Amino acid sequence: MIPSLEQPHSQQSTASSGQVEPEIADDNETELLTVSWNQNYGRFAFGTNNGFQIYNCDSLTEAFRRDFKDLKLVHQLETLSNPKGLYCLSHHSNTLVLTCPGIRRGEVRVEHLCLKMKKFISAHDSQIACMTLSLNGLLLATASTKGTLIRIFNANDGTRLQEVRRGLDRADVYSISFSPNAQWLAVSSDKGTVHVFSLRVRAAGRDASTQLVAAQIPGNVQQNALISAKSGGNTNSSFYFMKGVLPNYFSSEWSSAQFHLPEETYHIAAFDAQDTVMIIGMDGRYCSYLIL
Image (tube, rainbow, N blue to C red; front, side, top):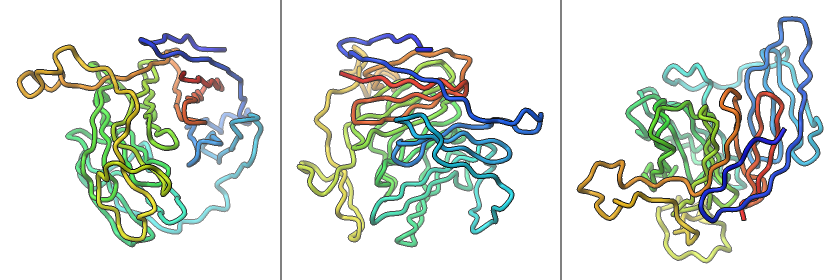
């Protein structure tokens, strides 16, 4: 049950896999709707129309389950039509950030709950298809329904920090995930490929060697910073030196690694350790790849 893997350039990897069978009653009423990670990617959840089940990534054992019978509404936010139920939450020690679609097409609403602040970021011309936050809520990555470009923003002031290209053809982006220190970004889609991008600016903790502060952070979250990354870069077009003259396509940043899976299966990707990519599919497939 291990999907095929193509290794780009000098990237090397090792893979492992497992099979998870979510318990779904055979009553023609329970339907598997979604699969998702928790905030630190140590667990994943299967969601149905009746509830959800949470599993540990290391042992693939069930950790928790809940049905919807005893849930009640606590708070709600106004958004544009959101049939996918898009939102993300980053719960850091001193920050609590929630994002969801805004009230305009291509807009993301960022709620800094501890600061009682909100910010609207115009991320794309098309509707938002997928979004994610870094673990400490400083970085926001988004994709539109076109699925060709992924954009990374400063979640505090909305500044666009980087743009990377998934591909040329339209795609339905299934997931976007930052690595623990946001050195890498993983993107999965209906093309059956997980792309891994190197980030120029990443979130770092208090003990990081900060070379370049890339954004102004509110005073009570200064234990985190956005710094310039020194990791290896992404692939560029051979015409990159002519950016500004040729169309934007020729100045695009492409992924530094790709993992290939069956196109017909919905799958999401995340990072376990700093250089380990985990992939879970709606078919119960679980794989992990170590980028060397």
